[in-house]
Length: 452
Image (tube, rainbow, N blue to C red; front, side, top):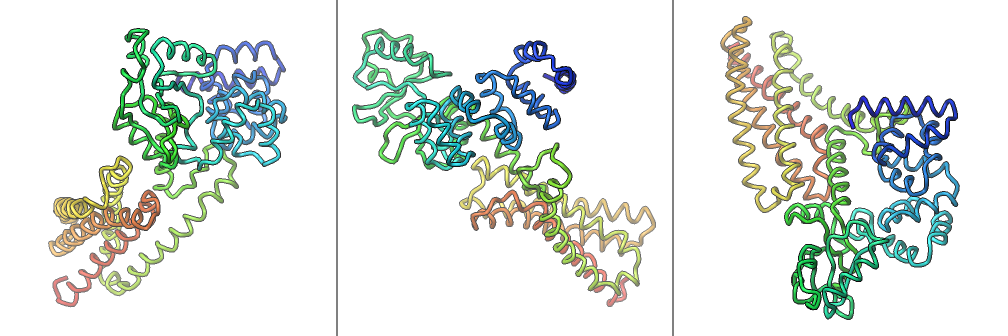
């Protein structure tokens, strides 16, 4: 659905809410997909979003809650009764229910668990012990498993029996009598096999699997590497405890991409475009204050060469070009590097080669852009020596950009920090200081030598 249609639905919903036209609202909501309703809720004022959510059936509300951002989800949940929330959570798969319940108070969580049935409550409680960003936190307990001695016919009957409660059945997981995972069978292979065939004989004996404590980013990489649609999750003893499906991994990838994007811009990952001004101010201010401190570091370098600038005013015109080009080059290096880390292409094993390569790229780009900058400066009236100064400063600063853009993310990763936080603050500081120091420092040397 395009943005115009989404806006049209939001405006239509707002008009119907103002008129209290419940039949028309119900009819409209029945025509929309849960994802479209989630977008409409996000486009409405908070009060209207809360009002609209009350018109949703428990089944539809359970799907819509998963389509809105976390802040709006908290708001919507806080404005319905525990009884209503119980009905909504009862419609969810265990992994989604665990995500919702984990954000509630202990009393609220207990009330919901008591209301969704003993079997589901036990499954959700088992999931709640795992950190949210691990395979255990992302898995769902709903799956089809069969003991390895069973036949294909028995397995198909088990699938039919569980299909009412489980969506997206793509594989059957095979275990021994102790529940240890021994194989996986796809539905395609199962259907094409003879009914009397033992499931063990057609299962993949060494299936790709993950343990409950594996980080969600690593899980996503495994899905990508093996082109999976589902993967079994086992405990430390190899016992089957759940499965992760591709829709959960897509959410992880989207979450990680936007988290890195926000961090590279110095933003809090919880900020949203419809947040109030006060919230946005407090979300952005800390990094801006840090940036202010680093800016004064760069300014202190400029101040150290104040006398040089006073003798050659043109330096004040040209030095932002040197620093700005360094910042742009460093951003390019960091973007490629952070992506490489996310995909597992860049690690400490090949770090030395990558750093040397980025230094060479920075040096070459600095040489080429330095020549171009010198030529443009000469065209606008600068003398040859100013052009030479600009060329050397540009070459040196793009070398600094390549080195800092490669080294700083690697250093942060080695220190167990997210490398995405490095671009907007630390690397820019390096290129600003490097650019000002080389350009103005060389200018001071040229002046003392009588070249300028």
